[in-house]
Image 1 (cartoon, rainbow, N blue to C red):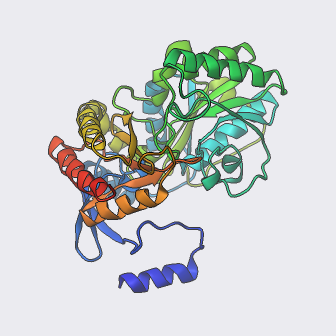
Image 2: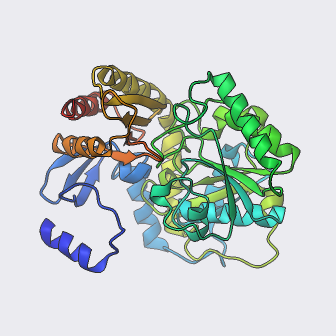
Length: 428
């Protein structure tokens, strides 16, 4: 059945639609932090559908909310008043940290970032955008145009002029040897110099922790220092929280809060985890920015009742069960356990991250060269051991991505770490 499904997949879907594993996996169902394949084998899920199943698989509170809403009405569009959409927007507004916020719902993080770029360029009357090297912001034409990761940017054509800034990767690049204070100062000086060579940009778009890039991040406070320079020129700050939002980093509810000394972003984009698998994305922006468009607009599927019901139930569960605190506690234990493992394996260059967002960078032993073949081998070995993880990386890097649901238990963290230890040990 699996071979037949793979053949059918290849006959009708694009060649560039990536599949993990030499023998691709069909996941049929899940419960808690586990999923099962078509052959009935169980796996501990440390990737959550690319950080999307944020809370748990088949969480009763969410499935009940979705089922009850489906029994009433699934969809009506934004042309009609929508109680679940208003209620979720109210909750998100209060949690956003943005003054006088407005919320617009989309169906994905790509669409959220696309909307944020539309708002920023319209508000500022400029199509120049600052973005981070090693970044990823989605699959749409404009989102690809601000993605600083060659592996996920299939075209240089774009409606935007994009200028790439230093700082998203702490341990590689021209400033890697500096201490944190010097690193931030050098990146700020680079930004200051760059702005002297271009017309005033609309915005800086940045992930607090770069997801597809391999869970890399700058020192805390970098974007606060950037914000001081940007604010002097009226340039907006867009925080792409598609992967970092909702408490995944443990220490903060939003990733930008590690850089909040100069105030909150002007725009925040979100998606993935808020829907726990349902298609929800969105934009939070100061009212004058959100309201700057001078033409009508709607969203056919953004904010539809069934996804809003899921988002409300998921957010309620997340807050009531302090999953941010659990991410901090269990994630802290997991990262220390993995660092102890990595210290014994020459191919492990760095284990980084915070909360339940952990990257394991691999290189060829004795060198600083990326080893994508080793990353693929560990991915396969982890699956064989009963664990699903992800891959990432940017320019000359290869990394494994570990991002379990935020309800992960200590016992499950230890189980996953033991499997990863064996998988990493296989590439010595």
